[in-house]
Image 1 (cartoon, rainbow, N blue to C red):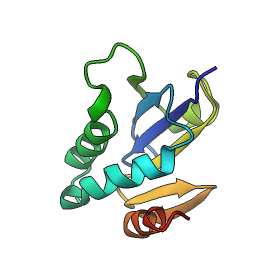
Image 2 (image 1 turned 90 degrees about the vertical axis):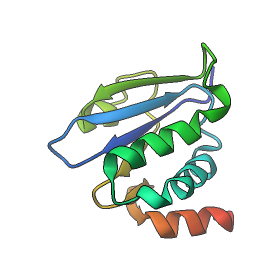
Image 3 (image 1 turned 90 degrees about the horizontal axis):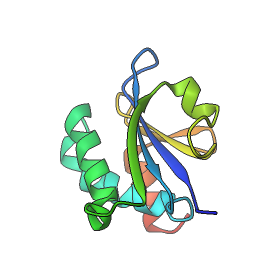
Image 4 (image 1 turned 180 degrees about the vertical axis):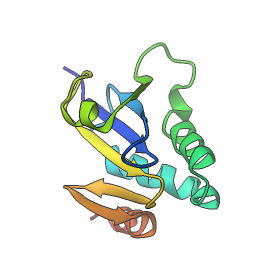
Length: 119
């Protein structure tokens, strides 16, 4: 039931993680996130604004909906353990400016370019 994924925004190992939970976003997670990361390009070096811009872009079509998205604070360990709704997650490291894909940290620019070619 659902197509769940957690988008976990990190500012470093010792910092809390902001998590955007999506009930229906797993299948399109990389394409959706790439569009949101591209949208936030002007603020890639500013973790607070970058996080806000990515999250805003991801939920732009559902902003008034009661369903689909949730947001909460967590730790990296909790997200990785699948404690909240799903064990599927994507880590976005706002310090290194990377997206974790299959355990590999991919720079924002490369992630956006790969998504554009459908990789």
